[in-house]
Image 1: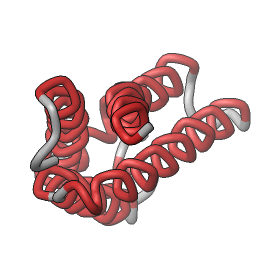
Image 2: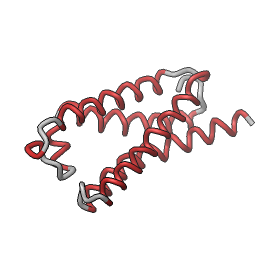
Image 3: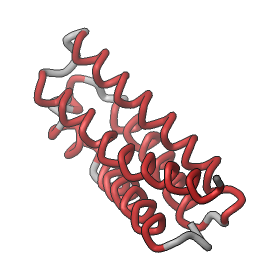
Length: 131
């Protein structure tokens, strides 16, 4: 994110804040996050581990993006967009399969969209600067 104009830095910062904040919450309190998503830990004892694996992935990504120089930021944003797009599709498919109720499905999709929008706009602005 270093060396970017203010608008791009703000968008990337917002994405990093959403990604890191939610991931830190999931890492520190995986059962609380599961309860909010209507997936109590008692139903799947392995889920807190999986939540923490996901959380570490997102915290590392947020740190990498926040500290990236101009040469790497585009590649990292593309990776983040791909991850968030697959998270949205996965949430939607899980909802269609009946694994989550509509409110939990929407919540899962919304959290991924909250990171997807600013990172996509940042990538668009970076692309316009190059052109």
